[in-house]
Image 1 (cartoon, rainbow over the protein chains, first blue to last red):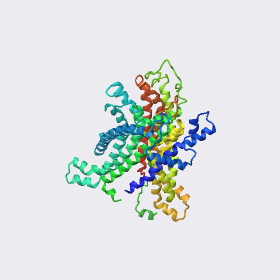
Image 2: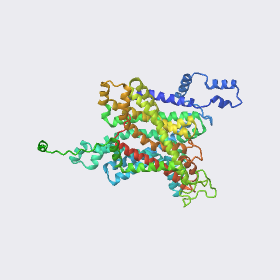
Image 3: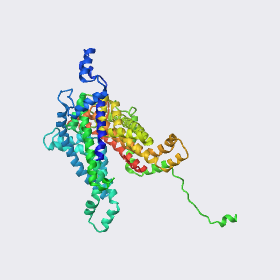
Image 4: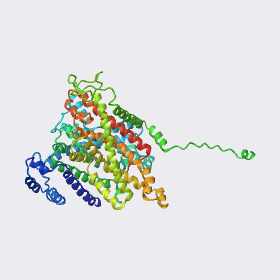
Length: 301
Length: 297
């Protein structure tokens, strides 16, 4: 509960940063709208209409009030309201991120457990070599390589776009690689830690079967730190989707954001960044709650 | 004379004291992956430095009669869509990418370590304020913060550098603060306070030297990540403009020729991967050698 109240200043801070960031952009929006032919009077009128002649804190208050009501303004480029665009694109990104999270959970955690359980064997080294490569891999490059191999050469999967479940495979794998690698490293470290604990030795000594030692005695406490990484990774995926979605022409939030930055469409940038940052904060909050549920030791702190 | 013979001779073999640096080096060198990483990084650095004197084609020299040629004896890595020698471009790219990596990390370290150090050393109100701000910036996942900064500054080499640097600074601040706080609670700091050493002297002579380990490890681990993030921004078209031989820019151009000239996509990306891999392996080894556990809180 204290954690919930604790995020309020962070949320407010995020809105301030997003609001101020756009004001830091060089150039006067009034001049941009009026064009070179605009007179001083035109400029003053436009500034007044945009509210730019009011003090900054008042502008922020008005902007925030609008944001709370779900009004994020209109795109400068196509004049559509920002929020519906963010929502429809956000659903696509969510789909992609969930797919990637699923891959990360299954592959990353299993690799980590195998590596920890068979530590300092060939399998451990193989898994960790994969993980090291994975965290060093430029996302867009592995995306292009996968596209070349499985779509262009083999023709098994669609090159780009969205629509069928098959469209989800390559972008999903691409987005998942970094997180999978990171999670497998974290899982290994955490499981190694747990497997050396006294109670695991006790479990073995009293004749528990190995699967039982792993699943009942080690898994739960070993996975608690990994859950935190999971939450963080989800946020990084929402941001990382910018790159993956550009490679695979996936019509998601990231692509929208990348295009908006290119076109200097600030209402979209502002809205997109705000939505991603806020979801990141909320996901981390949810993660903390889950961690507390999984680890009773933390609840009493 | 007799006296000395009466005393049983005890032979003490005293080993020469091992300096910290030598110990560190020997621990690092025992890590094979770390050495491999260091070799890779040095190789890239060497190529980057020597790029202008190596007998390569000019990175921008076009040869429109030999476009998208696969690797050959004349062009070891083949040519791109404008007939430019890919080897030359990749090697010149090493200069740019290493520079971006080092400068971006320095920016992040400079801002982050100063803020975190200040917070950790002073504590109280300053600590609270700085960490609040850090917490707010941590709410933006790394790449998103970099994107926000680039969209404010406009595309370009230096905005990418600055953007990546700024996006890494909150984490630097946390690492620095945690490490200062830890050292501050050590007994030798208390001892220095007890003999009345002034605060700045304690900071400079006792706290900082002992608090640098984690921040150095964190920085070395971020070098690789910074190179990858910066090249991602360039790939998105937010970095330097073509024909700059930057690896991300090259990949952005190459992706349109994925069908007919996959080698133009493979080599620049491979260079990014290897450079990042080198820094990450070396950073891992350095962390193990210094025996640092990176704490963020």
